[in-house]
Length: 104
Figure 1: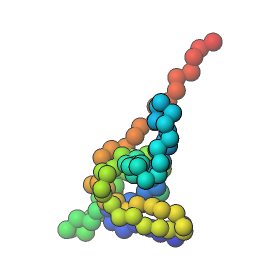
Figure 2: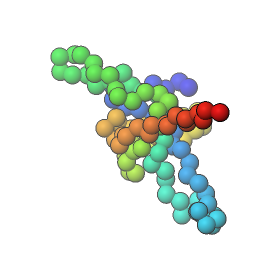
Figure 3: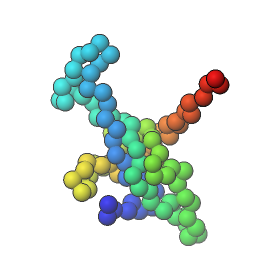
Figure 4: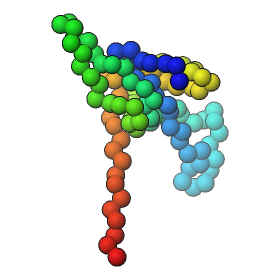
């Protein structure tokens, strides 16, 4: 991909929600809300302070995140719909739980 976000911006791929409810009802595309969960594709270098130093971002490429419903700018890069957000629009990082192995 030929895109690199600048400063405190991040490039996010939305993760799609289920198209069915728990009861098995299929939700049409027009009634679905845009997901507010995504995976980071690329990150900028960080925030530049007045003294010229750069503070790196707390997120990294590959992190799964939650973000505000109306935050960011939608863009199409290489035919894929992506979202550009500022790091401050990120509500949190979703931690993946490690599955405990059972002792046999």
